[in-house]
Amino acid sequence: MDTNLFLDADLSILGEEWDLYSGYCKNIRKEYSIYSDSDYRVGRGKVLKYFIDMDRIYKTDYFFERYEKRAKENLRTELKNL
Image 1 (cartoon, helix red, strand yellow):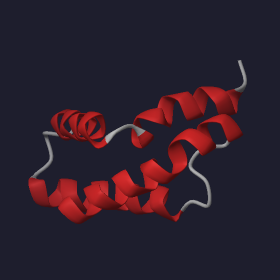
Image 2 (image 1 turned 180 degrees about the vertical axis):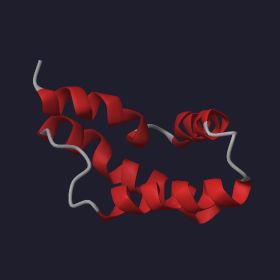
Image 3 (image 1 turned 120 degrees about the vertical axis):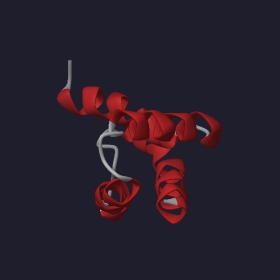
């Protein structure tokens, strides 16, 4: 399997509808529940900014065309809501 296709599939959640993506965000927070809210916001904020600043999140044209725009919107919304 092509590595870029595998990675893009793994990141496809970032470009899903907000309801699905926000559920993912809640699960990520649970996964990192050992961290205080303050520490989580700092760390998660760095991750979100990293993805927002990427020229392309998705390496394959298939995923880029379907998910890139919404992924950036979701990431910006999550960052704003941290």
